[in-house]
Length: 640
Ligand code: RUQ
Ligand code: CUA
Image (cartoon, rainbow, N blue to C red):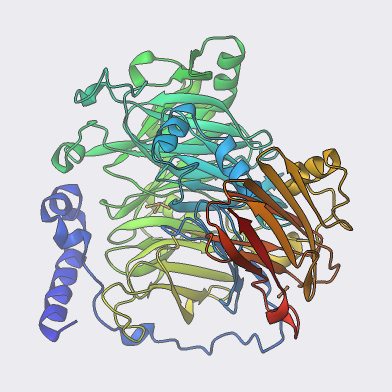
């Protein structure tokens, strides 16, 4: 940034620092590009790492798994904490050349079977089987009794309204469901108690239901739905129609309530309309009342899904709308199980709501406002809050480029009028413009308060210049002591929206596939029909114009050094990796055919294509598996 720009940014930040209260929606909305895209306040001395980065020496292992959403890449990433090393990636909604995800039969089955019929039809017309992009925001591991159980991880695709489930034993997706009546599935959180259970998803954009062209420009008839997916079956359990646009969501530790922040309560479609109000709300959902209504058949079945009307004017006991300052964003449940926090975004405040008060609210004994037990001014642009399990909260301030540490009970005392307490403990500069932050185990009852990551959207001057699109900056902060201490910068490709951090003892992936893994059950079943023993046989089976090629891989050899097919045949190649050795993955790439896939130890992977090119084509192993890896190849002969 030039010094001239820097001065401008500085003075703008000073301005907002002193007029925090005025920097609510009116100012922010009209300033548009000004406030919304303001980049940091230049380099800050105080923010230079004052501690040495935590030492995870070569050969040493990390203490935690960090599950990073890959944002617009549509994938997930696993980051070791505290080293911040990227350990691996999990392809989810993207196409991945290293694994064949989105091209193999196994992955295509998962990516297509949960699609809505209208999407399938649309995709077919485009010559596609599935969407090949996604926008992953919120990755959350499954719970039992308020803490992570290591079974699954769920993540949303905002763009195409999907939710994927990842098996944590093999770190691969096994189910994908597309959410009906929703465009832009954004907020996602999991039921904590008694277990997951429900996957709660917010549809962000209001749409006509059904979206069939009958309602087009009349945006007052658009609706937003809150969806509960059954995490075991990956089918939609129910939906509740609400007022406003849903943003983020979270739920309690007792299995009774969920909450979601809403913006755009005026239900407009332009920026001016959307922000033309003093207050929006956090909508709270009464899970027992919703379940009872669905069971009693009170829901309208739309496209096979029970939909309840939770709008204010319907006056049902499914929802209540708790007023909060306009345009709230993050929604975060405290690990003590008592509260959730709505983060102000355009308001410099966080609003604290007590879950227990919702009993009285739904019973009609108290009003919505009575559920609010605190409202603390934390700074400009509060987006998300995380916790240390010692009573402190950490809120990202997007505009101030800071993390604000504050004490929850003190904030509640101050709200009650106790002027002697100072809830804010510390503000730490981060570089720059943080979105989510998350601390180790912060979203479980076992929050341990060791590390916090701040996922910053801008890195500006923190790394050598790589062109106009800069990396993001994920910063590691030590929160184990009284003061937050910045210890590490780590660059990241666009855009890790969010992360959860789990002690390594809770996650136990396998090294080698078991032969009865459901991932390749279809291949096993087909082989059985063809009387092929996948671990021993190498065979080409012709079935009319369909050809099934079965081969093994064992370093440094494929079971077949060539196979012959006819021009126009539909060919399926099944490769079974019979190496029973940790880390010995093979690949199968077919030259000139756009085919590349992994076959991990003891797995079978398959791919289907039409042999539309006459001639000689090599297939080769793409993983450097052996000194003779280059020789691990064979020929496909396609005759006219
Ligand atoms: S929410 S913009 Cu995680 Cu900040 Cu997606
Ligand atoms: Cu197998 Cu290289």
